[in-house]
View 1 (cartoon, rainbow, N blue to C red):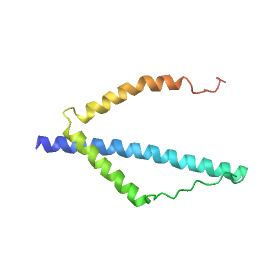
View 2: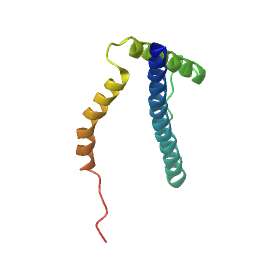
View 3: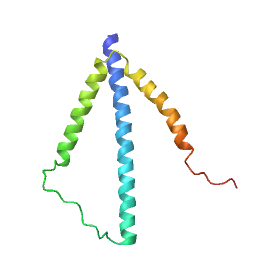
View 4: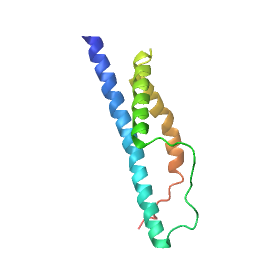
Length: 113
C-alpha cells in the first residue's frame, strides 16, 4: 500500500510540475504571438519572405503525440531512479536560486516616488 501511495504521490508531483512548465511556455508563446501581431499591425507586413521548406514537417497532432511519449518516458525514468523525484526537484530549485538572483540585478526598477 505504501509503495502504491508513494508512486501516486510521485506521479501527481510530476504531473503538476510538468503541467506548470507547459503552461509557462504556452503563456510565453501566446504573449509573443500577440506582440508579434501587434508589431506587424503597427509597422505593416514584413518585406522578408516567409521561410519555406521542401522537407516533410510533422503536423501538430504528431508533435503532441511525441511530447506525450517523451513525458511518459521521463516519468518512467523518474520512477526508476533511486533518488526521489522530490529531492531532484528541490536540488534543481536550489541551484536555480543564485541564477535568478543574478538575473534580478538586470531588471530595471522604477525610481522611488
